[in-house]
Amino acid sequence: MHPKLRKFLIENGLRADATEAEAWELYKQLQVDDVAYNGPERADQDPGGERSSEGRQQANRSAAGARQHSGDDNEPPSAAGMSSEEVRAMIAQETQRSRAIEDACAVAGLGVEEARSMIDRGLSIEQARSELFDTLQQRQQTIGAGASVGFQVGTEDRDKFRAAVVDGLAMRSGRRIEQPAAGANEFRGQRLPDIARECLERAGIRCRGMNPDQISSRALSPAGSSDFPLLMSNVANRNLQAAYTEAPSTYRQWVAVGDANDFKELHALKLSNSPDLEELDEHGEFKTADFSEAGETYKVITKGIKAKFTRVMLINDDLRAFTRIPTMIGTAAKRMENKMVYGLLLSNPAMNDGKTLFHADHKNLAAAGDIDAVTLGKARAAMRKQKGMAGETLDVTPAFLLAGTDEEMNADILLRSAALPDVNLSSGVHNPWAGKLTPVTDPLLDLSDGDDPFYLLAHPNQAPIIEVAWLLGNEQPFVDDEMEFGTGAITYVCRHDFGCGVVDHIGAYKIPRS
Image (spheres, rainbow, N blue to C red):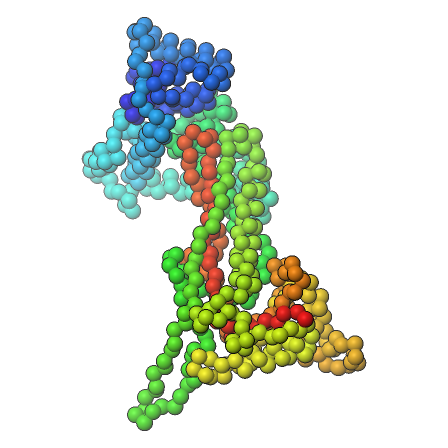
């Protein structure tokens, strides 16, 4: 611990021979009592008037006890010269040191007591690792894969505990788990403060005598070593991903899916540039295909939002509020994807050839029309006549009828009726469009001006028009936790890496409404 911070703690009741763990415990208690380090100003002063009289009396009693213990009636010198930013930086360094030493001890198969001893003695990470190596050499133990069987059993028990807690809390929040982990039903009925206490005790932290406020502060502390923040992060991820999967979207069935290994630009591949197969030449060899590169590009971008699990939520056992937040975020992530794809379609972006996606020169834009057999017939004929980059006839076949919700009923009647729905024809006239197209309707296509277009789209395996990609193929959003010192909360960050871009124009035909 930094000498200036330790001096500050001694001024507020810490014994001069106290261990590092005891020093951190007092620091946590001072936070609870609203005693904050303010540089040169004495912490037991109350310039803002916000501390309670009980808190002031406790601080004074602690300080008096410290002076009596040290045998010095004179006040110790003030720990001056440190800003709040310096304190936070120091705490972050101390947290990193403590966690690194604990991890090193765990890998070596040693327990919490050995780790706390090294931390309390103020060893650096390098010193702790060197001491561990010497200790293991004396014990003739191996590190890593060959570590002691006891460590492997401990790790297995820890994983089982985590799985049981996560499944139990997920079921408590209303999620259905087909095969819950062993012990999940026990944690399904436990309160969050009780789970936090068990996490602390499993980490070797004695909780006897701690009140719920102290347990909550310690469980959410960045200097703590319990699994509680990780468990809550896993519960948030479970709810986030379930909500994302269950959220409705309509774009996925008609788009192509690409690969993205990073955030660099992706070059979409046109499927209209494959040349025709040819006979063997006079030497009995196949002619080498000459593919033209497409110029359309897009890239994956990151979007996200933060949410906090607070000390108040923990003390109040407010699991519903905690799980509801990632559920809403998961739904919002799917909604974001849908909005990006349809926004790209409606914006009619310019392509590499300088023309917009839907353009008369691309032969994929009608003058106007309605959802009826005649209009669809003309659009289908135009799509089947599309030419590839080498002038080849592609025979693009429409597979989807894409429209806004205002046209949903008309689309269903036309595409699902056995007879052609025309008042001027008898009911026995065959409907050539029955079962030929899959109707897809989305409210994002209902434009405010009432001039809602509709589209014929080919299957993405034949002629994709828009391609989507997720970073490294991770389609679902995920939650990561960020420990913030002094906030009494864990900040969870939801990130979603997604991108979409136009591939080609031949797989779609746009018909503005007449």
